Image (cartoon, rainbow, N blue to C red):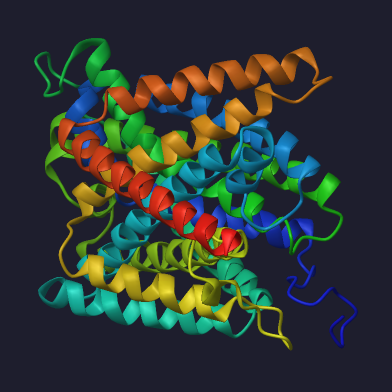
Length: 427
Protein backbone atom coordinates (compact mmCIF):
# COMPACT_ATOMS: atom_id res chain seq x y z
CA UNK A 1 0.00 0.00 0.00
CA UNK A 2 1.07 3.60 -0.65
CA UNK A 3 1.03 6.40 1.88
CA UNK A 4 -2.33 7.54 0.45
CA UNK A 5 -4.04 4.16 1.01
CA UNK A 6 -4.20 2.82 -2.58
CA UNK A 7 -2.61 -0.48 -3.67
CA UNK A 8 1.02 -0.23 -4.71
CA UNK A 9 1.34 0.34 -8.47
CA UNK A 10 -2.24 1.60 -8.90
CA UNK A 11 -3.30 5.08 -10.02
CA UNK A 12 -4.85 7.63 -7.68
CA UNK A 13 -8.69 7.68 -7.92
CA UNK A 14 -9.29 11.43 -7.67
CA UNK A 15 -11.28 12.62 -10.72
CA UNK A 16 -14.90 13.75 -10.34
CA UNK A 17 -17.60 13.50 -13.01
CA UNK A 18 -17.19 17.16 -13.91
CA UNK A 19 -13.45 16.76 -14.35
CA UNK A 20 -13.95 13.65 -16.50
CA UNK A 21 -16.42 15.56 -18.72
CA UNK A 22 -13.95 18.42 -19.00
CA UNK A 23 -11.15 16.09 -20.08
CA UNK A 24 -13.39 14.46 -22.68
CA UNK A 25 -14.55 17.81 -24.04
CA UNK A 26 -10.97 19.07 -24.09
CA UNK A 27 -10.06 16.19 -26.39
CA UNK A 28 -13.12 16.38 -28.66
CA UNK A 29 -13.44 20.14 -29.00
CA UNK A 30 -9.83 20.56 -30.06
CA UNK A 31 -9.55 17.36 -32.09
CA UNK A 32 -11.74 18.39 -35.01
CA UNK A 33 -13.33 21.81 -34.81
CA UNK A 34 -10.40 23.60 -36.42
CA UNK A 35 -8.88 20.79 -38.47
CA UNK A 36 -11.23 18.23 -39.95
CA UNK A 37 -13.65 20.31 -42.04
CA UNK A 38 -11.26 20.74 -44.95
CA UNK A 39 -10.67 17.06 -45.86
CA UNK A 40 -14.26 16.15 -44.94
CA UNK A 41 -15.68 18.88 -47.21
CA UNK A 42 -13.44 17.72 -50.02
CA UNK A 43 -14.94 14.22 -49.72
CA UNK A 44 -18.62 14.93 -49.04
CA UNK A 45 -19.11 18.32 -50.70
CA UNK A 46 -22.58 19.72 -49.93
CA UNK A 47 -23.50 16.49 -48.07
CA UNK A 48 -21.14 17.30 -45.21
CA UNK A 49 -23.93 17.52 -42.63
CA UNK A 50 -25.12 14.04 -43.57
CA UNK A 51 -21.59 12.73 -43.02
CA UNK A 52 -21.43 14.47 -39.65
CA UNK A 53 -24.69 12.88 -38.52
CA UNK A 54 -23.52 9.45 -39.70
CA UNK A 55 -20.24 9.85 -37.81
CA UNK A 56 -22.24 10.91 -34.76
CA UNK A 57 -24.46 7.81 -34.95
CA UNK A 58 -21.47 5.48 -35.08
CA UNK A 59 -19.74 7.41 -32.31
CA UNK A 60 -22.90 7.33 -30.21
CA UNK A 61 -23.12 3.55 -30.49
CA UNK A 62 -19.45 3.30 -29.56
CA UNK A 63 -19.96 5.61 -26.60
CA UNK A 64 -22.81 3.43 -25.37
CA UNK A 65 -20.70 0.26 -25.55
CA UNK A 66 -17.76 2.08 -23.93
CA UNK A 67 -19.93 3.23 -21.03
CA UNK A 68 -21.31 -0.27 -20.40
CA UNK A 69 -17.86 -1.87 -20.48
CA UNK A 70 -16.14 0.88 -18.48
CA UNK A 71 -18.65 0.45 -15.66
CA UNK A 72 -17.93 -3.30 -15.65
CA UNK A 73 -14.13 -2.92 -15.86
CA UNK A 74 -13.11 0.42 -14.24
CA UNK A 75 -9.37 0.09 -14.86
CA UNK A 76 -6.82 2.07 -16.85
CA UNK A 77 -6.54 0.96 -20.48
CA UNK A 78 -10.07 1.26 -21.90
CA UNK A 79 -10.85 -1.17 -24.74
CA UNK A 80 -7.46 -2.84 -24.35
CA UNK A 81 -8.73 -4.13 -21.00
CA UNK A 82 -12.23 -4.92 -22.28
CA UNK A 83 -11.04 -6.86 -25.33
CA UNK A 84 -8.43 -8.74 -23.30
CA UNK A 85 -11.06 -9.85 -20.77
CA UNK A 86 -13.87 -10.57 -23.24
CA UNK A 87 -12.17 -11.62 -26.50
CA UNK A 88 -8.77 -12.91 -25.49
CA UNK A 89 -5.15 -11.84 -25.29
CA UNK A 90 -4.47 -11.35 -29.02
CA UNK A 91 -7.59 -9.22 -29.76
CA UNK A 92 -6.85 -7.23 -26.63
CA UNK A 93 -3.33 -6.52 -27.78
CA UNK A 94 -4.52 -5.44 -31.23
CA UNK A 95 -7.10 -3.11 -29.66
CA UNK A 96 -4.44 -1.52 -27.50
CA UNK A 97 -2.04 -1.32 -30.43
CA UNK A 98 -4.65 0.40 -32.62
CA UNK A 99 -5.40 2.88 -29.86
CA UNK A 100 -1.80 3.78 -29.13
CA UNK A 101 -0.89 4.08 -32.81
CA UNK A 102 -4.08 5.86 -33.90
CA UNK A 103 -4.08 8.30 -31.04
CA UNK A 104 -0.39 8.98 -31.43
CA UNK A 105 -1.28 10.11 -34.95
CA UNK A 106 -3.96 12.33 -33.41
CA UNK A 107 -1.31 13.84 -31.16
CA UNK A 108 0.80 14.57 -34.21
CA UNK A 109 -2.16 16.29 -35.89
CA UNK A 110 -2.84 18.41 -32.82
CA UNK A 111 0.79 19.36 -32.31
CA UNK A 112 1.13 20.40 -35.95
CA UNK A 113 -2.12 22.36 -35.72
CA UNK A 114 -0.66 24.36 -32.86
CA UNK A 115 2.39 25.05 -35.01
CA UNK A 116 0.42 26.01 -38.13
CA UNK A 117 -1.71 28.52 -36.23
CA UNK A 118 0.94 29.96 -33.92
CA UNK A 119 4.09 29.92 -36.04
CA UNK A 120 3.40 28.77 -39.65
CA UNK A 121 7.01 29.28 -40.71
CA UNK A 122 8.28 27.11 -37.86
CA UNK A 123 5.33 24.74 -37.50
CA UNK A 124 7.32 21.60 -36.69
CA UNK A 125 9.48 23.34 -34.10
CA UNK A 126 6.36 24.77 -32.47
CA UNK A 127 4.82 21.28 -32.53
CA UNK A 128 7.78 19.87 -30.62
CA UNK A 129 7.58 22.66 -28.04
CA UNK A 130 3.85 22.05 -27.56
CA UNK A 131 4.41 18.32 -26.92
CA UNK A 132 7.07 19.13 -24.33
CA UNK A 133 4.78 21.67 -22.66
CA UNK A 134 1.77 19.37 -22.33
CA UNK A 135 3.93 16.50 -21.11
CA UNK A 136 5.20 18.75 -18.34
CA UNK A 137 1.60 19.66 -17.44
CA UNK A 138 0.54 16.00 -17.31
CA UNK A 139 3.53 15.02 -15.19
CA UNK A 140 2.57 17.67 -12.65
CA UNK A 141 -0.68 15.79 -11.91
CA UNK A 142 -3.98 14.88 -13.55
CA UNK A 143 -5.85 17.53 -11.51
CA UNK A 144 -3.88 20.26 -13.18
CA UNK A 145 -4.61 18.67 -16.55
CA UNK A 146 -8.34 18.83 -15.81
CA UNK A 147 -8.04 22.49 -14.82
CA UNK A 148 -6.22 23.34 -18.04
CA UNK A 149 -8.90 21.48 -20.03
CA UNK A 150 -11.63 23.50 -18.33
CA UNK A 151 -9.97 26.77 -19.32
CA UNK A 152 -9.42 25.61 -22.91
CA UNK A 153 -13.03 24.52 -23.36
CA UNK A 154 -14.35 27.78 -21.90
CA UNK A 155 -12.21 29.87 -24.26
CA UNK A 156 -13.06 27.88 -27.39
CA UNK A 157 -16.80 27.79 -26.73
CA UNK A 158 -16.85 31.53 -25.98
CA UNK A 159 -15.10 32.38 -29.26
CA UNK A 160 -17.34 30.05 -31.26
CA UNK A 161 -20.46 31.47 -29.63
CA UNK A 162 -19.31 34.99 -30.50
CA UNK A 163 -18.67 33.96 -34.10
CA UNK A 164 -22.08 32.29 -34.42
CA UNK A 165 -23.87 35.34 -32.99
CA UNK A 166 -21.94 37.64 -35.35
CA UNK A 167 -22.98 35.57 -38.36
CA UNK A 168 -26.65 35.65 -37.34
CA UNK A 169 -26.58 39.40 -36.62
CA UNK A 170 -24.90 40.11 -39.94
CA UNK A 171 -27.47 38.03 -41.80
CA UNK A 172 -30.41 39.68 -40.07
CA UNK A 173 -28.99 43.11 -40.85
CA UNK A 174 -29.22 42.38 -44.55
CA UNK A 175 -25.64 41.35 -45.28
CA UNK A 176 -25.28 38.43 -47.67
CA UNK A 177 -23.34 36.21 -45.28
CA UNK A 178 -24.63 32.77 -46.23
CA UNK A 179 -23.49 31.28 -49.50
CA UNK A 180 -25.75 29.07 -51.59
CA UNK A 181 -23.97 25.92 -52.74
CA UNK A 182 -24.03 25.88 -56.55
CA UNK A 183 -24.46 22.58 -58.41
CA UNK A 184 -21.30 20.67 -59.18
CA UNK A 185 -19.62 21.30 -55.82
CA UNK A 186 -16.46 19.23 -55.26
CA UNK A 187 -16.62 15.92 -53.48
CA UNK A 188 -15.92 12.26 -53.98
CA UNK A 189 -19.70 12.17 -54.65
CA UNK A 190 -22.35 9.67 -53.75
CA UNK A 191 -22.48 7.26 -50.85
CA UNK A 192 -18.74 6.63 -50.97
CA UNK A 193 -17.94 10.32 -50.47
CA UNK A 194 -20.41 10.61 -47.59
CA UNK A 195 -18.95 7.54 -45.89
CA UNK A 196 -15.36 8.66 -46.41
CA UNK A 197 -16.12 12.06 -44.90
CA UNK A 198 -17.91 10.35 -41.99
CA UNK A 199 -14.80 8.26 -41.35
CA UNK A 200 -12.66 11.40 -41.29
CA UNK A 201 -15.16 13.27 -39.11
CA UNK A 202 -15.12 10.36 -36.66
CA UNK A 203 -11.67 11.67 -35.75
CA UNK A 204 -13.48 14.54 -34.06
CA UNK A 205 -15.75 12.38 -31.89
CA UNK A 206 -13.23 10.02 -30.33
CA UNK A 207 -12.47 12.14 -27.26
CA UNK A 208 -14.82 10.21 -24.99
CA UNK A 209 -12.22 7.40 -25.07
CA UNK A 210 -10.15 9.60 -22.77
CA UNK A 211 -12.81 9.14 -20.09
CA UNK A 212 -12.81 5.35 -20.39
CA UNK A 213 -9.02 5.15 -20.26
CA UNK A 214 -9.12 7.16 -17.03
CA UNK A 215 -11.30 4.50 -15.39
CA UNK A 216 -8.70 3.79 -12.71
CA UNK A 217 -8.54 7.47 -11.70
CA UNK A 218 -12.28 8.32 -11.56
CA UNK A 219 -14.27 8.30 -8.34
CA UNK A 220 -17.24 5.90 -8.27
CA UNK A 221 -16.47 4.66 -11.81
CA UNK A 222 -19.59 2.47 -12.14
CA UNK A 223 -21.75 5.62 -12.20
CA UNK A 224 -19.34 8.38 -13.14
CA UNK A 225 -17.93 6.99 -16.39
CA UNK A 226 -21.25 6.39 -18.14
CA UNK A 227 -22.66 9.75 -17.08
CA UNK A 228 -19.52 11.61 -18.12
CA UNK A 229 -19.42 9.95 -21.56
CA UNK A 230 -23.11 10.70 -22.23
CA UNK A 231 -22.83 14.35 -21.16
CA UNK A 232 -19.66 14.90 -23.17
CA UNK A 233 -21.12 13.36 -26.31
CA UNK A 234 -24.36 15.40 -26.28
CA UNK A 235 -22.60 18.72 -25.64
CA UNK A 236 -19.93 18.21 -28.26
CA UNK A 237 -22.37 16.98 -30.93
CA UNK A 238 -24.36 20.18 -30.49
CA UNK A 239 -21.22 22.28 -30.89
CA UNK A 240 -20.16 20.38 -34.00
CA UNK A 241 -23.53 20.78 -35.69
CA UNK A 242 -23.41 24.54 -35.12
CA UNK A 243 -19.86 24.81 -36.46
CA UNK A 244 -20.64 22.65 -39.50
CA UNK A 245 -23.60 24.86 -40.40
CA UNK A 246 -21.42 27.96 -40.03
CA UNK A 247 -18.71 26.55 -42.30
CA UNK A 248 -21.13 25.34 -44.97
CA UNK A 249 -23.40 28.36 -44.73
CA UNK A 250 -20.72 31.05 -44.94
CA UNK A 251 -18.05 29.41 -47.09
CA UNK A 252 -19.90 26.77 -49.05
CA UNK A 253 -18.39 23.31 -49.65
CA UNK A 254 -15.88 24.45 -52.27
CA UNK A 255 -14.22 27.12 -50.14
CA UNK A 256 -14.40 24.91 -47.05
CA UNK A 257 -12.42 22.25 -48.94
CA UNK A 258 -9.80 24.76 -50.07
CA UNK A 259 -9.05 26.63 -46.85
CA UNK A 260 -6.76 25.01 -44.29
CA UNK A 261 -8.28 27.23 -41.58
CA UNK A 262 -11.98 27.44 -42.52
CA UNK A 263 -13.17 28.99 -39.26
CA UNK A 264 -10.59 31.75 -39.58
CA UNK A 265 -11.98 32.40 -43.06
CA UNK A 266 -15.52 32.54 -41.65
CA UNK A 267 -14.34 35.10 -39.09
CA UNK A 268 -12.64 37.15 -41.80
CA UNK A 269 -15.97 37.47 -43.64
CA UNK A 270 -18.05 38.59 -40.65
CA UNK A 271 -15.58 40.32 -38.31
CA UNK A 272 -13.21 43.20 -38.69
CA UNK A 273 -9.90 41.75 -40.00
CA UNK A 274 -8.15 42.88 -36.84
CA UNK A 275 -10.12 40.34 -34.79
CA UNK A 276 -9.46 37.22 -36.85
CA UNK A 277 -6.44 36.51 -34.64
CA UNK A 278 -8.89 35.61 -31.88
CA UNK A 279 -10.12 32.57 -33.83
CA UNK A 280 -6.57 31.56 -34.67
CA UNK A 281 -5.58 31.85 -31.03
CA UNK A 282 -8.60 29.78 -29.94
CA UNK A 283 -7.72 27.13 -32.54
CA UNK A 284 -4.18 26.85 -31.27
CA UNK A 285 -5.33 26.68 -27.65
CA UNK A 286 -7.95 24.04 -28.53
CA UNK A 287 -5.37 21.89 -30.28
CA UNK A 288 -3.06 22.33 -27.30
CA UNK A 289 -5.82 21.17 -24.94
CA UNK A 290 -6.61 18.16 -27.11
CA UNK A 291 -2.94 17.24 -27.23
CA UNK A 292 -2.76 17.41 -23.46
CA UNK A 293 -5.66 14.99 -23.00
CA UNK A 294 -4.63 12.68 -25.84
CA UNK A 295 -1.20 12.14 -24.31
CA UNK A 296 -2.93 11.51 -20.99
CA UNK A 297 -5.09 8.72 -22.45
CA UNK A 298 -2.37 7.06 -24.55
CA UNK A 299 -0.02 6.83 -21.59
CA UNK A 300 -2.72 5.00 -19.56
CA UNK A 301 -3.25 2.41 -22.29
CA UNK A 302 0.52 2.03 -22.63
CA UNK A 303 0.68 1.47 -18.87
CA UNK A 304 -1.98 -1.25 -19.05
CA UNK A 305 -0.26 -3.04 -21.95
CA UNK A 306 3.10 -2.92 -20.17
CA UNK A 307 1.53 -4.38 -17.03
CA UNK A 308 0.46 -7.39 -19.12
CA UNK A 309 3.90 -7.86 -20.69
CA UNK A 310 2.95 -6.65 -24.18
CA UNK A 311 5.24 -3.63 -23.92
CA UNK A 312 8.53 -3.16 -22.01
CA UNK A 313 8.08 -3.50 -18.23
CA UNK A 314 9.63 -0.09 -17.56
CA UNK A 315 6.48 1.51 -19.01
CA UNK A 316 4.41 -0.01 -16.19
CA UNK A 317 6.14 2.01 -13.49
CA UNK A 318 3.88 4.32 -11.47
CA UNK A 319 5.21 7.19 -9.39
CA UNK A 320 4.78 6.21 -5.75
CA UNK A 321 3.91 9.70 -4.52
CA UNK A 322 1.68 11.19 -7.20
CA UNK A 323 0.43 7.90 -8.68
CA UNK A 324 1.35 8.88 -12.26
CA UNK A 325 2.78 6.69 -15.07
CA UNK A 326 5.79 8.92 -15.71
CA UNK A 327 7.76 6.45 -17.85
CA UNK A 328 4.79 5.84 -20.17
CA UNK A 329 4.05 9.57 -20.53
CA UNK A 330 7.63 10.48 -21.39
CA UNK A 331 7.97 7.62 -23.88
CA UNK A 332 4.73 8.46 -25.69
CA UNK A 333 5.75 12.11 -25.92
CA UNK A 334 9.09 11.15 -27.45
CA UNK A 335 7.39 9.01 -30.12
CA UNK A 336 4.97 11.81 -31.00
CA UNK A 337 7.82 14.29 -31.39
CA UNK A 338 9.67 11.98 -33.78
CA UNK A 339 6.59 11.39 -35.96
CA UNK A 340 5.60 15.07 -35.95
CA UNK A 341 8.88 15.88 -37.66
CA UNK A 342 7.83 13.88 -40.76
CA UNK A 343 3.98 13.58 -41.02
CA UNK A 344 1.48 16.25 -42.18
CA UNK A 345 -1.90 17.09 -40.64
CA UNK A 346 -4.17 15.54 -43.28
CA UNK A 347 -2.22 12.29 -43.33
CA UNK A 348 -2.33 12.17 -39.54
CA UNK A 349 -6.14 12.56 -39.50
CA UNK A 350 -6.72 9.68 -41.94
CA UNK A 351 -4.23 7.41 -40.19
CA UNK A 352 -5.73 8.23 -36.80
CA UNK A 353 -9.25 7.44 -38.02
CA UNK A 354 -8.09 4.03 -39.26
CA UNK A 355 -6.61 3.04 -35.90
CA UNK A 356 -9.37 4.48 -33.74
CA UNK A 357 -12.22 2.97 -35.78
CA UNK A 358 -10.67 -0.48 -35.42
CA UNK A 359 -10.21 0.18 -31.72
CA UNK A 360 -13.92 0.88 -31.34
CA UNK A 361 -14.79 -2.13 -33.47
CA UNK A 362 -13.09 -4.14 -30.73
CA UNK A 363 -15.10 -2.20 -28.13
CA UNK A 364 -18.38 -3.20 -29.70
CA UNK A 365 -17.26 -6.80 -30.26
CA UNK A 366 -16.39 -6.96 -26.56
CA UNK A 367 -19.79 -5.54 -25.58
CA UNK A 368 -21.53 -8.25 -27.60
CA UNK A 369 -20.01 -10.93 -25.36
CA UNK A 370 -21.55 -9.58 -22.14
CA UNK A 371 -24.01 -12.08 -20.74
CA UNK A 372 -27.36 -10.79 -19.62
CA UNK A 373 -26.88 -7.48 -21.45
CA UNK A 374 -30.06 -5.55 -22.21
CA UNK A 375 -31.34 -5.69 -25.77
CA UNK A 376 -30.61 -2.00 -26.35
CA UNK A 377 -26.96 -2.63 -25.40
CA UNK A 378 -26.69 -5.40 -27.99
CA UNK A 379 -28.33 -3.28 -30.70
CA UNK A 380 -25.88 -0.45 -30.01
CA UNK A 381 -22.93 -2.86 -30.11
CA UNK A 382 -23.99 -4.35 -33.47
CA UNK A 383 -24.59 -0.90 -34.98
CA UNK A 384 -21.24 0.34 -33.72
CA UNK A 385 -19.32 -2.69 -34.94
CA UNK A 386 -20.81 -2.59 -38.45
CA UNK A 387 -20.47 1.19 -38.65
CA UNK A 388 -16.78 1.14 -37.66
CA UNK A 389 -15.89 -1.53 -40.21
CA UNK A 390 -17.76 0.25 -43.02
CA UNK A 391 -16.13 3.61 -42.27
CA UNK A 392 -12.67 2.03 -42.10
CA UNK A 393 -13.15 0.47 -45.53
CA UNK A 394 -14.09 3.81 -47.11
CA UNK A 395 -11.20 5.92 -45.76
CA UNK A 396 -8.66 7.26 -48.30
CA UNK A 397 -6.64 4.34 -49.67
CA UNK A 398 -3.36 5.81 -48.41
CA UNK A 399 -4.69 5.79 -44.85
CA UNK A 400 -5.93 2.21 -45.19
CA UNK A 401 -2.66 0.97 -46.70
CA UNK A 402 -0.43 2.63 -44.11
CA UNK A 403 -2.76 1.46 -41.35
CA UNK A 404 -2.57 -2.15 -42.53
CA UNK A 405 1.22 -1.97 -42.57
CA UNK A 406 1.35 -0.71 -38.97
CA UNK A 407 -1.27 -3.26 -37.91
CA UNK A 408 0.85 -6.05 -39.40
CA UNK A 409 3.88 -4.70 -37.56
CA UNK A 410 1.94 -4.94 -34.33
CA UNK A 411 1.03 -8.56 -35.01
CA UNK A 412 4.69 -9.42 -35.63
CA UNK A 413 5.68 -7.68 -32.38
CA UNK A 414 2.98 -9.59 -30.49
CA UNK A 415 4.12 -12.94 -31.89
CA UNK A 416 7.79 -12.28 -31.08
CA UNK A 417 7.01 -11.03 -27.55
CA UNK A 418 4.73 -13.97 -26.83
CA UNK A 419 7.33 -16.47 -27.97
CA UNK A 420 9.94 -14.77 -25.78
CA UNK A 421 7.62 -14.96 -22.75
CA UNK A 422 6.93 -18.62 -23.43
CA UNK A 423 10.66 -19.38 -23.51
CA UNK A 424 11.23 -17.54 -20.22
CA UNK A 425 8.33 -19.36 -18.59
CA UNK A 426 9.67 -22.71 -19.79
CA UNK A 427 13.12 -22.19 -18.34
